[in-house]
Amino acid sequence: MKRRWQMAFLTFALVASALWIPASLTARAAEGGTSGPSVQPGYSASADAGSTSMHASAGSGVAPNPLHGPGNLTGSEESSGSNGAANAPNAPAQERVVRVLIIGSSVARGWKDPKGGGYLHRTFSALSTLTPITYDVIDKAEPGKGVLSIRNTYAKWLETYQPQIVCIAWGGLDDLYQHTPFRVYDEQVRWQIQEALDHRAMVMLVTTPVSKASYTTYRVAQQALMESEIQVADSFHNPNVYVFNVFDQMKAYLQAHHESIQPLMHDSWHPNARGHALAAELLVKDILGKFPVTAPVFKAEPSSSADRARQESAS
Image (cartoon, rainbow, N blue to C red; front, side, top):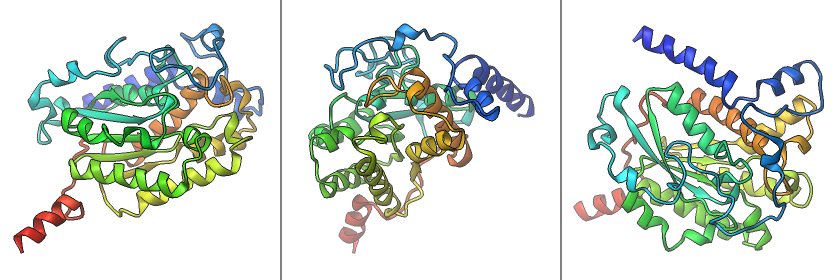
C-alpha cells in the first residue's frame, strides 16, 4: 500500500509538470508577474485562433474525450462493455471504475480546448491517474443548450448509463441569454439533482470557469445564478451532493495573483486551453480535498422521493 501511494505521488508530480497544471502561471504570479499564464506544453497558439462566435453546431469544434479517444463523446458503447465487477460498489478500490455522466453546455463540453478536452475531462483524466479510481466519462454536455434542454432525455440517460456520479456543470450564460427565469433555472437544477439521487448516483455540482462575460455583460447576473444553484444543492443536506465552486475560486485566484482574464479567454463566453487548464487545476485540488476519491460510494439515505414512496407504501 505504501509503495502504491509513493508511486501515486510520483505520478502526480509528473502529471503536474508535464500534462496540464499551469505551473508557470503560479510561479510567475508568485513573482508578481501580471501577464498571465504561458502556453502549456502540447498546445499551440493556433489552437485558440479559430472562430470567436458564441455558438456553433454540436458536431463541430468539440474536443475529443481523452479517456476514450475521438468519436466517443456522445455514446457509451464502450461503457456498456465495461467489466461489471469493476463497476460494482463493493469492488476493491484498485479495480474500481466509476462512471460519470456530465451535463452542461459548451464550456462543460470543452470548447476551445481541442487537445485537453476541457476542464472537466482534464480533471477526471488527472483523477484517474492520481487515485485508485478510473473515471469513465460520458459527456452529454451540448453547446448552446440550457437547463431546460434535457428535460425529456435526462432520466433516460440515468437509466441507460447508470452513472455512479452525475456532474452538473451548467455555465449559466446560455440561460441568461435565453432569459430563463431564475426560478425555472433553480427548479431544473433541483430536479436534476433529485433524479440523480433517485437513481442512486452521487452529484457533483460544478460552477463554471469564468469568462470575459463573467466580468462584463453578465457580471451581476451570472454571479447571482451561480450562487443560487449552490444554494439549491446545499438545501438537500445530503452527503451524496457535493459542490465545487470553480467560478468563485477562479475569480479569487486571478484577483490574488493580479491576473487578467484576457490571457485565459478564447472569446467572450469561452476559456482557451490555458483557462481550462487553470480551472482543472483548481477543481482537482478541491476534489482531492473533500471528495472520497479512494471509494466514492453512494450513501443510502431515506431522503429521496423513491425512498419516501417506499416508506409510505410500507406503512
